[in-house]
Amino acid sequence: MARFGAPQLVIANAGVSVGTHGDDPRDIAKLRRLLEVNVTGLAATLAAFAPAMRAARSGTLCGITSVAGVRGIPGAGAYSASKAAAASWLESLRVELRGSGVCVVTICPGYIDTPMTRVNRYRMPFLLPADEAARRIACAIANRRRFAVIPWQMGIVARVLQILPAPLYDRLFARAGRKRRDLAI
Image (cartoon, rainbow, N blue to C red; front, top):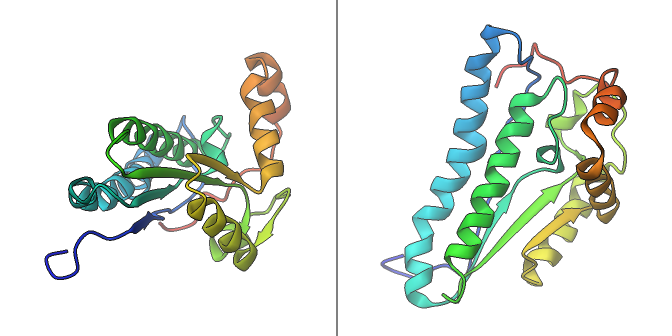
């Protein structure tokens, strides 16, 4: 930054995932690791550039979270919690930087065909090829959208999940597919 000045765009795409069970004390270490990477890694990346961008009164800070942060997904509670925390942190940052000239964009992807999702043994609705997801994400960033769910169909699913009463959500997701717990992160 001393040589070239503040960047115009910083994208924090920190993310690891592994299945966890909230009732297994051995998974606390996995929770800690997911929070460290998915929340602290994202926050540290963006915070490193925010002061220079604020001083320049321009630029875009973008954080990639996940639609999984909308509700606690059984078998992926640590991942869901980390992505929900990242989205909340980004929302706070966006409001803190309001009027500074710095835009904060939160991208919540659904399923994208990557090595991280290829290990999933369950149905992944609206799965996007990585290059198509990248194109849509780039478009949302270029348009300086404050919050974007990609693909848009997952945005509808996320809204429905948000308004489902807890007893109905519990019943529907009690038998949902689970992320593998045997993966290293």
